[in-house]
Image (cartoon, rainbow, N blue to C red; front, side):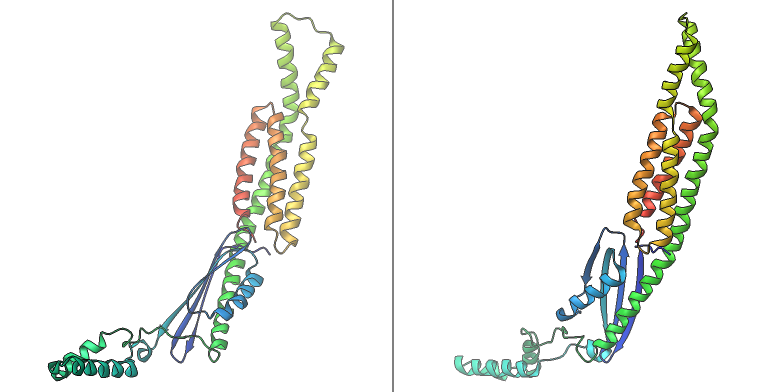
Length: 295
């Protein structure tokens, strides 16, 4: 069964210092265009992740997100005690150096508040979230998110399959209608030419007239287009049923189907056939739009 390139998967892992949430989103694309949108992932794990996503999802515009929710204890900003004490010692030394005794004698709370505002005294909270110890749990969450997006793609693929195959069948039914107009088209063409000759008061040689009619009708013959279109439709169905990733190939088959439908329209010379051709073009365009999302 075919898969869609549209999908979404989400999973999480509980770590000692908080919770990691992994989200993967994909839409259609010609190749595997992977974008990792998280600073949490260690650089030495990036190639491993890209390989996993590429092998599992194969094609599409793929966005990978990772967010971290720290525990209450982890989320609190921490004081860099060593740096704060060093600032204090330097402030006291500065007071002695410049003879500003009042600087050392000022309110300790005020001095403390001043030191806490100095650069890097308060830890910004940025730290290594993922390490060698908790990577197995994070990796398991990534695997689960990948499984979920693959399941999502399979579900979407079933809907795509039903839609495009029903439209292929509609095109074949419309071409059956075209066959019903062919005899009428030949008679109408013969009558139209005969009437034009009568209006112009041209005397036609019956034998020559039949020869010219044969040449004229050969130019309007659509038997070759009919055979080729049906072959293309069968190839389309065989490909979508048997190829695990038929998206690109289906695009080429659709081009050939469009060529035969367009040629039929150019040779139609009949209002009923033209209506069928317009309907076939409409169905084929919808197939083309949907096939762009097939893996």
